[in-house]
Length: 103
Image (tube, rainbow, N blue to C red; front, side):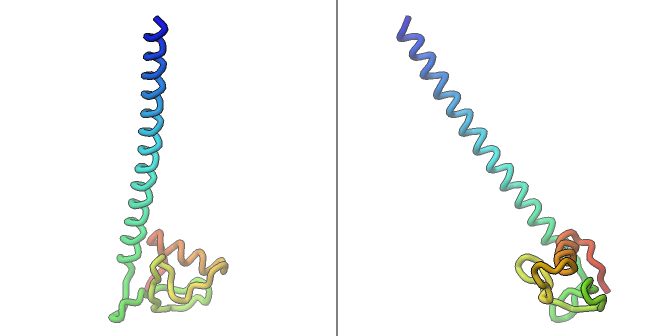
């Protein structure tokens, strides 16, 4: 009987380890999928912004309340973006969300 119990414990522990590994893998892939969907949504929103012939997006600057044509960087922030400034942070967020005021 002790061999049978040992075998049961061994199998149970191995199946539990496999289940934990599966759960970790599933969580990781769910996170990757969520990140990819979010990146797609941001890129789609940025591409829908009106732009001029040079590829600069036409937006209204929140900081200076003026019309601007600005290139977007790889994080979809306007070239005039200044890190830490509340208006610039809000502008970059609005570009990512697709709700920026344009002209």
